[in-house]
Amino acid sequence: MDARFDVVIVGAGMAGASLAAAVGPRARVLVIEAEERPGYHTTGRSAAFWSESYGGPGVQPLTTASGHVLQELGILSPRRAVTLGRADEERRVAEFAETYGAIGLEVDLLDRAGIERYVPHLREGWTCAAFEPTCCDIDVAGLHQHYLAQARKAGAELWCRAALREVERTGQGWELTLADGRRIAASVLADAAGAWADPVASMAGVRPLGITPYRRTMAQLAVSPPALDDMPLVLDISETFYFKPESGRLWLSPHDETPSVPCDAAPEELDIAIAIDRFEQVVDWPIARVEHRWAGLRSFAPDRLPVYGFAPEDPAFFWFAGQGGFGIQTAPAAAEVGARLLLGDAGGAIDPEPYAPGRFS
Image (cartoon, rainbow, N blue to C red; front, side):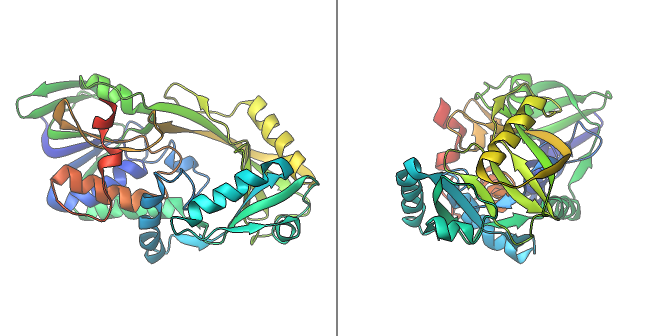
C-alpha cells in the first residue's frame, strides 16, 4: 500500500476542493483528480453568478447561507438580475416574485418601462419582469483557488492525473488502485466526482442514485454597441435563455439541458444557433461575431436537489454530488453541511435531511 488516508475525495472541482478545505483540519485527506489540473470540467466552465432564486426553493437555503461567506471573501461583485416575461406570462412572473418574496428574498416586479431601464435594445412583446437587486457575479477561479489553498494549508493532499481504476471494499474501508498503479487505503471514500458521481459509486459497489449529467452551452458574443458592464443578468421565466455582460461582450446560453454521458463536453453548432435565435427574439442588438463557445456538464439527482451524506447501504461511502448548476454559489454552505455529516458533528444552521441520499431508497 502506497499511502493511507482517513478520507479520499474523488474530484477536485469546487465540490471536492471545498469539502477538503472543511474536513482537512480534522482528518488526513487526499483529493484525487483524473485530469491534469483541478476544476477542468464544470467548475472551469461556469456562467459565474450568484442568485438566491437559482435552483429553486430547495436550494435557496444553501445559496443564502453561502452569501455572507462569499461576500467576506471578496468573491462577489454586484450584477442584479431581470427575469423577463411576455404578456401571457405575467401570472408566472408574479408567482415567481411572490414565491421568493414569501421566503424573504428581495424581488420586485417591473413593467415595460421598468425593464427598459435595465435591458437595452428590447424588442416588443416583453411586458413584465421580476427584478432581483441582490444577484451578483462570482469570481469562480478565485473561490476555487481559495478552497484549494485552504485544503493544502490544512494538510490535505491533491493528486492530479490520478484516475480511479479499481475500488475494493475492506473491513477497514477501501483499497483504491489508480490508473498509474498506485494503491491507497481510505477509511471513507467521498464521491465529489460531478458528472462521474454514479460511475464512481458503481465502482465501489454502491447503488447509483440516477445522477444525470446535462450539457449546458455558452457563447461569447461581440455586439455593437458593446455591452455596458452594469447591465444585469437577463433571463426569461420559461428558462429558454440567459445572457450577461462580460468586458463589453455578452455571455449567452440557450439554457439547454441535454442529457449526456460523462465526458469533456463540447458545444453543438445547433445549440449555438438556437441561442442566437432566441437572443434575437429578445433584443435588436447586432452581433458582430461569435468569439468563443464552450459547454459544460451539470449533474442533477432525480429531484434536482444535491446529495450529501453517507450511503444507506455503506457507512464508508459518502455522497457529495448532484449539485447541478448551483454548486458554485452554494459551495460554502454545502461544504459546511458535508463536513458536519462526514465528521459526525451535531447542530448546524441548515437541516441536511432534504439532501440525504436515503431519500431515494
